Image (tube, rainbow, N blue to C red; front, top):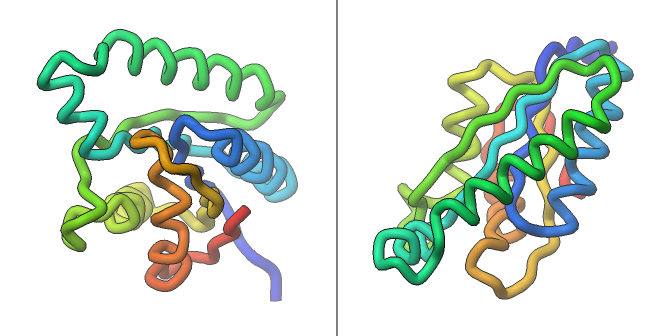
Length: 145
């Protein structure tokens, strides 16, 4: 039995592990002649920081654009799209970043998810904390790197 993969979802944050997940996502997409959708996940503390002026929204946007540009350069012939999910909280399960990732996975009808699992303690390093949730509840195959 072989996998039929047309679209790979790679949620990212501001970590090195997110960059590694993109590398894996691109390799899978290349192997299966699939597309990659990079989902930039911004956690509630970053959103609150933008709202209060403690975090510069333009800096966050610039970081996402830079990450997107670097990802696109690595892509070779793989088609890549990007989007952002903002304002999810680690403290309320319904607004957990993991549930946001799975919602996007369903909306885009992705066939495979690559999610970073390790994390730090910075507010913008949210995905490692969500990886287990994604692994447990995704209806798609998940690679946690």
